[in-house]
Length: 428
Image (tube, rainbow, N blue to C red; front, side, top):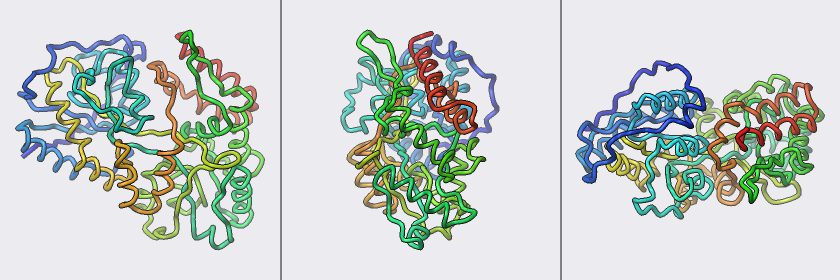
């Protein structure tokens, strides 16, 4: 039988971002026969996903039966992941396989820490484009999509029905619906506008017609957050809280977890949430079964506005000596059987495009609008290793909170944030 030991994680000292980008893993290279004498060590993130124990016990047992290679899985809290991985790279103690958030992959690839998978003749076209793009750097492939998450709107369908409200199809209808809920449901938050949830801010930048940052022909980056288009979206979103009263002052410090809890605790009528959240909400509050639904983020005038396509990639570390077996394990988790089972257990979408519709059809109908969002209106962050620093400095969060706290106008906050993004992405 395969082993699946759960290690108690002890926080390690923080590693500087500069160390991450300078560090290079070293070693003898992978064995050609695909064997791994000491078994494989795999790091899987913990904090967003449900209890993964049963899944990995069976997945690892199947892998060992097929290959003879045993697997040791260690669960790492998301909030500690970047520092722990950075420290492991610096100390030469990396695992064989690692789950990486899609925005982190380019930075570790650029550091030389990840094994180039392009030599394995991967059909990269089969994966969700926005996620696969984050696994590429130059001509190399340094991670393949495992699962995807997308953000749309989860709402209380019973309350909508009670007040005769329809799903909004543009921004103005969204505002009208939110204000109607605020007036009709005393003591309930109509539409939370969180301050510490950058992926809830990004759609409004794109929806207004702006870009977070665009690479120019000469290789420099220019942010469009402070353009009229970018500002229009941010002003609309923050205006729901500041002018229309659809949110609550406490939401200025809310993360996506607090937003999800506001729905689960029946404190909010609708909110921007990830595709895995409905399952978690119903597990937390089964009484909401049949009383929540979802809709795709509406466009400014019509259609849909883009939403951030998050998710995880599976990568193989360079220089462990187990690269061949590690790649086999990545294929094992992303193959039909276990990728679909993972989606069924977590509510995340498979990383393979063809499987998204298949999963959404077999899953709870509430995921249908999320599937539309993922296939028709999804985007990623700028593909550059320096983006990890933008996230580490929480620039979009700081911008959002400064506006919601009344510390800066939309024009002031976007100008400052755009300048900082350009400074970081251009190596300043």
